Image 1 (cartoon, rainbow, N blue to C red):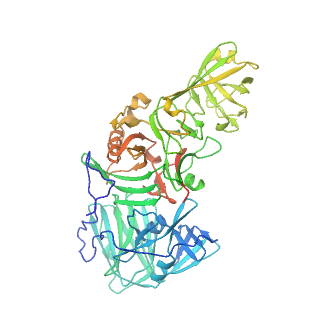
Image 2: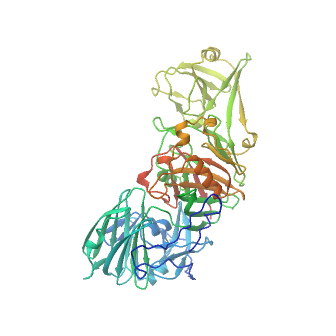
Image 3: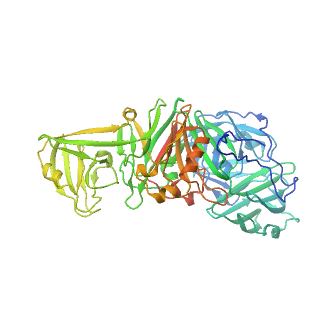
Length: 593
């Protein structure tokens, strides 16, 4: 039994292993071996031309990114595992990724990085398995391998879900297509005389009906699964078997994915309940590793999009959803700062994290307001900057919001300021109707139910704008992202949702969570916490306890529920993409190998 390093002694611990095969025999399923010996493969040639997003296996076209460099062919690593079943093993060497496929030993493939993906060079390894690789300039890579037979099939319930085992006469290629509540597995092989499809029809824990059809040299299995479960297909040798697991838990994983970027996963217990936890740990002091705020409609501020789309558009290697937003008008509700520019300002003294490119990071509740002073000596507080959070008073909108501003509330008075002087004042009209240009040499003020300020800010009035940012350690850090509530500060739980303007209902609900932490060694933790098997997601208190177990000294809750998503190497690693909603902003990870 292997204890994953993500699981620490503290508030509770669940040990996960591959043992516990239920009614299936030891011959049918063997425990996954300890880390095996590793054979070396030839490193990739860094030159080449072809690439694409589809791999063809038999008659199946699969969404799998690939790239050719010279005479070397690489396939995106997580897609190679999730779709083609080449199992990624734990590794502490980012230059070697051990993999297993119908073998008791692992082979180390060499990675290269490009466009937000980590490609594994499969050229020599595929040749050893008699795979034929045919790249095409239409974006497809065709995989062919010797065909064989599926001899038998059986199915059994497990404590974590359900398992199907296919006995095969030799290693066979397959492709997995997974949707929110079903999967399709296509195996390139004929059914043998001992294959009985009815053996797969028994009811299960997370897997219900299984339909089987064969013909044309392929066996196709289609299954209905619980929406909280994920499908994992892998292989065993001696004798060769294909294993289909429908799991409601998360298996231990620890892969140093790139220098300074570690992917870990497992189950973490709080009290008597275990939760699926995925995390990407970042060492921002590592040369070539950077963390940046992203937003959906850059350079415009309004807009929402799925995290996977946002990350791929910006070619981030990893990403996590971040701050809150208004889903109706698609406007941000919290701090987003990049390169010293406030894309959106903090609200309600909520928690935020700030950092620089040298690896310094701080976390605390964040306050920002501005004082607007006229030449006549009048002073007015400007409450928010580039924010969808509105209330009576004055809102500030800069060119970082976009080229124009459309009223958020009815009856706003819009004041254009250029070169520290009021240029014009106009009524805003109805919410969402029309727009007013934002001066490129100044800003726009949205005056809401504040007649004194409207009377004072007439055209020709000279004004100055003075910021008040607290705490002061945030001032010199160019990047920031807000969330809330703050969970941990200096290893103490400081959770107080009401202090940060969250409702009682929000404070007590259980849901999938995203969170960010700062570890004692300065590493940044991007964490997604999903449902416990067959149960609910964590509460805020449980989220704080989990972040403490992961080693966070400071920790901040991010937007959760349908937004909670963690991306790595081209795909979501914590849940199926069809189960998540669109988001406004995120944190993106970049590497320069």
